[in-house]
Image (cartoon, rainbow, N blue to C red; front, side, top):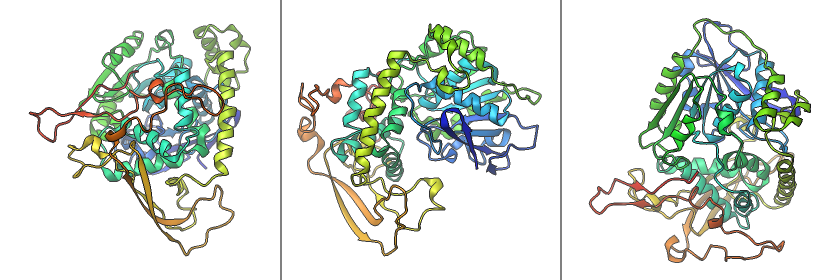
Length: 502
């Protein structure tokens, strides 16, 4: 099986994507093909959801690709630990390199979460990385405060109503893809997000969100330690990148052998999906100039030197006393930060237990892509999430305006029970009905914008003041952007407002 049993009970999924279009868990015997490690982003069900990794891609033809899923990504499983940060995930990669005896090679990382892990990997283990190809890594600062981050409890980790979860995930999807998705594709993305990030999996969502939204200690001093060539691609309309972010970020790479940047016109954050030909060509061109002319040989990770870098970069001499055989030893977090995360983990573990005793959130039915062959043959539901298109009513993708999933919705279900029997031993048993779901707004979203907002200073059940979404720092970053349409403009031209505040 394509799994590596790494320290700290991390079961890391990997896949060898061979130039001939096949895949498996064994490295190819052809020594003429250089190795490329690709980190599978959290939005991908499998490596095949990344266009650059599919058969027929120039990268697939020219390289032996090792696709790895970091913690809380894809099929990788691990216990959520309070020390976790991008440097801990970087140590996981180093242990994977050791287990597979991989030579130093380029790393391709699309998206800000995978990208931050790749940057941390190059910082701690420079001997293993020959080049970095990054997409959407636009800075090192957090996008909200710890207090703002806590407001995700009420919308994502432990929502009061399923509609709160749908709203939060709908906003997330729109912030990633902008208006690049048609209705069917948006429905597929939403189904994936609801299945993987409903409250029964709050810890998984929490681990990803911490890296995405909070400060992750990729300080200018740490980034300046990268000497490898770096390719940094960004979408012009990436809502996670403000004007000037790319220049500030790349200026910190002043010790790098080469820094190449490109802004993909009209592209969202996930430009590797929306503009695959452009991004693949840029990555291939960059890597072709930084691929060794002779096959590289295995180099053992220097864990002692990485631990020394951890102690130096984060001004923590006690880090030298840690066990270099454990990934958590390379964490950048302080003792106080670890204690805070540990408290969060216990709280979210309680949320998961409570939600597992409740009916499954509607829309979270089904199985993962890799489970389909082994799953019991049961009709799969088809959920319709796409009442969000009024935010982009003039888009050529959408023939008629619809209401946003972020507005108040009523879910109407027409259900026909399946005659097939469901195995009672099925883990995390889910409803097995044939359903067709449509989301219909009870009122237009603009009619009463305050109806769904929390009252300032409202106390929650624990007696604490509950912050509004506007207080969280996410309201400008994840909410769908309303278009500004010029009276003289063509009805097909949409000018989005300013993007995310980093």
